[in-house]
Length: 217
Image 1 (tube, rainbow, N blue to C red):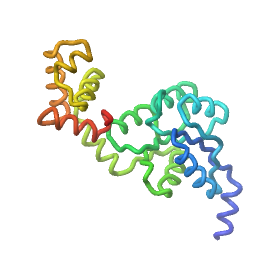
Image 2: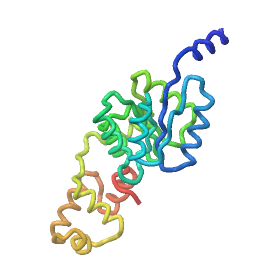
Image 3: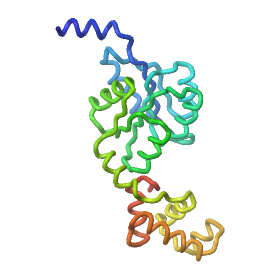
Image 4: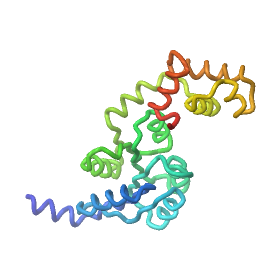
């Protein structure tokens, strides 16, 4: 039976995969992983969003592993641009961050899977096969984080910017100077941020923002 299964796999066209990540070692690891799988073939690599778009158009892969956090355009923007021309394209987010903010953005952009880079190689292979078959893969811990987040209100872009400046330890007046607005307006933004994140104060709001991936350290 084992030989018959191997023959069947060999006769089935391999899943064509594109790997996009700005770290060469990550791409090298994925290439080595897929090289051992008879039902998968790495057709191209890319180190950034624009290169990924070009490689996708050239090879039209069936599944793309996409790093979310790259120099502009990031993984989310890149996927949106590709899907505007290839709406049936299938993507798996491959990231070092597990914040629910990133998970939510990835789902909205049309990713079919979300994996942390430190997950086992078997999880990556399983994800590729599942997403290729039209299914969605989301780790249990990611689903739990997303479920915890759903009842909470979104921060506005301005509130995210204020939160990011708070993480730098700036006072209201300093933040107002950076944004060109009054410190009283900044105070209102901070009050809204604290309420939306369910924090007790601005310090905890920053901690929650970093944990959830809303802002970066």
